[in-house]
Length: 256
Ligand SMILES: [Zn+2]
Image (cartoon, rainbow, N blue to C red):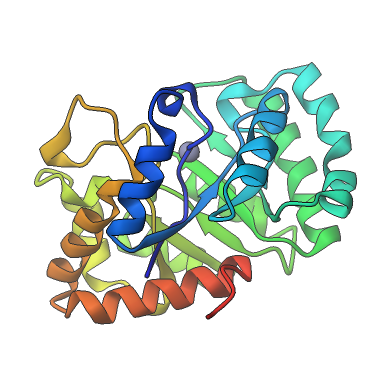
């Protein structure tokens, strides 16, 4: 069984065929979907999705591209939703920093707030980091005990090892399928097996052979096979490792 540790199945891009996508994943043995938030105004849509599909678990939070004063204000409800949600809300995020997009001061404010909630509730954090790895690592050191995943990881082996040292896993996605993505391919080929989870980030981040098309969690197998090739390991061994890592990260899905 495989779990997509990061996909936006609640986005409009899936409104027309969400059911078919989930069924087709089922046939490929992709049986769980961690759906992270981009902004509080979309949390109700996520909660609805999770109540409809038992295969879906959620992270709630505020993405660095979507920061605003209003959105940060709405984060005050976060802890309470964790307490009373009837569906699995298992992580905070996605949050983080992005040097290329979004207001830097508000990103930092949103990030710090979400890290403090993660610390208080002892929940994992899903981080977005674009050209901000060292900065994020410095901030994370102020929140001891906070753990999680750097999703859509695109840094070097050394960047990755520093995140692992402070309690984070790396979300490996479609980027590794691109022949010219040398840095991340080199990192993914050497990273310890206990440090990685797989993700599509659908509907964005299409794998190399599907550029321009909507990405889908169905493409998770391409990423698995590519990682197995880079690691020179049997895909089955990679599959077992990433499933165990996902379980460790989110305390989900339950083993059967
Ligand atoms: Zn995402």
